[in-house]
Length: 216
Length: 397
Image 1: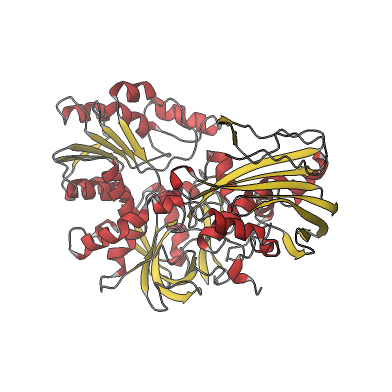
Image 2: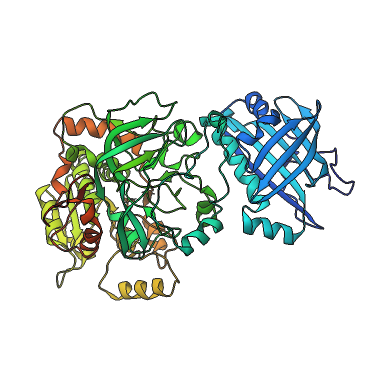
């Protein structure tokens, strides 16, 4: 059973409910609601792998661009800190991040500590019921206005959806070693409407390269 | 290369497009030697399936020769001959481990679109809308096959393409339909729709021990094929024929032990409910025309089984769920778990238990395919199955 996140990343008014844990003392915990410029997303998946191995992939922050969308470079700047670079369309943003809690094989929590993104998050790895792989639950918080969120949705991927997609990529990457992709496959001539559909379906967001495509 | 592209509702055309290339380590490129047009391609052609984009390459029944493999493909090599299943499996997720191959998690790059529509996402499919992954299909000279270490079935015998091509979809689909019907020795099984899936459901029902199979359709050439397998046929378009009465008459009043709906969302019906569905779908108040489903629920015996290989796309209206509950029926449905059935069915073909090529009525070149989509839609020229040789020069029609 997961403990709630108590580090209160970013600001003291963070609710103590802000845990990636889906349960507490046998009760289901609903995800936190968006309010006052804070956007929350909680999502989970079940991966056919050991928690220790999944923790290791997640904790290797410099490898994050292999499976996280639009993250082009991550550089370690200390034992618990790193510099993140994100490319969204023509726009590049950078921020620093620090690890707040690090429980090998079980849990990682982090927050931004300056730069162009204000975020905090937590991931928990637990043995799935019946020993069927590992349940991976992510809680991510952004501080972002509705307008900025709508803009991101329009130009690429809704920020909440991006967290869901990244967890999906993580699972595919961990289970199969690759991330399913269609970018680069042949097609006939696309009209204007097909172009709009590609945007609406977020098909223009580059699929992360996965491990074996490191070279490109 | 040349490929058949979806341009819009009721319009497909042959375009020259880029050759596919390896994009992921488990990819293979297949040179397509034979491909077929499926009944479900008509759902795309007729605009019933959302999230199609102009320029999409269609086709999910194909086979060919391995041209190139990604660095992590170990089971195939250049020059191998293989049939490719229409569903794309990763082989590694929890669903693949449970052999629910069509539900696997890791092969649909657009899973979020299907989650928005259905709540959950299934596997990626070739040439079947962006909701189902947006993968380019096989009605083309070459095709990229992702997760080629799991899907393609190597053909190591000398059987001609036509005898094994239908392992890509319709034969396993028909077989799973019969298996889902939970047939006991001597059962009476009713099959709606005598297209390719219905044909193979009939043949499989007999292979699994059915005592009587009743085949329902309106097209004489299809009913004739069904009779050639030993089925009793009911032509629902004939005057004075009521399918429900016919099924009672042929089962001593109890109804068939199992019903198979091999028609799906675009059922034709000449009675009042058929008009009702056409009006409601036109007004976008329902997405499917479920007249066969309604009839099958009404027809099946108490405690019987309803198996649904026919494709449904969305929201259905006026489905007699009270009758389903009252009779305590079991329903089984879904995309085919291809990978379970391909190898055992190949063995049945090799042993001569079934020759799937009997359903083929038309053999054409790629250039002829756009015109044949219309023939297939309108069921002209006694069409029962169209097979394309993507490398053939245009033959005389």
